[in-house]
Length: 240
Image (cartoon, rainbow, N blue to C red; front, top):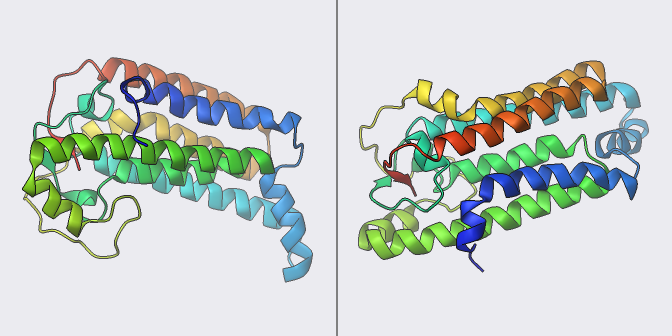
């Protein structure tokens, strides 16, 4: 079932709530997902559990950094107002950069971010965060695809048939349109996401929850501020 108008308009807040509601699940399940997995695997593969925990959190930070990079790359092909727009933009179709491998790189990056952030949640929190993120992203995608199909017609159908919806293809599926990325715009739009990655990296090094939540809180505040301000910028082409 596709997302409603309200869900699409408030997707930034819902993404934030998915992260925000995952960590309080420690009250139900007190065991951290990363440490639990390290304690489970460490003795079996002959690696010190504490060292393995640091490595798992480092992998979480890497997943979040990759998410930030993909979002920055994707946003560099869009006006910031499209990324955070309150309604679906269907004036034209962007099929360059990461959009040559996956139709929804921004949402794919959100799933990677949930995996990275989930390593710091409880086991239940990790499952909730990832499941909720995948489900909500798919609902948003179905909403956007319906609007794009209605306005773009056969051109979008050819693109849809060639390029995967959410999981990227190894090779580029459509030729480049010659559009150049605007990296400054991309970093401006996704600065908050780099903050998420930084918070996990700091925790992987220090195992300090205080440092993690301070950086994460600042990043969340920046996320909501960015999405609120940039949603008011002028229209431009939309992603596939």
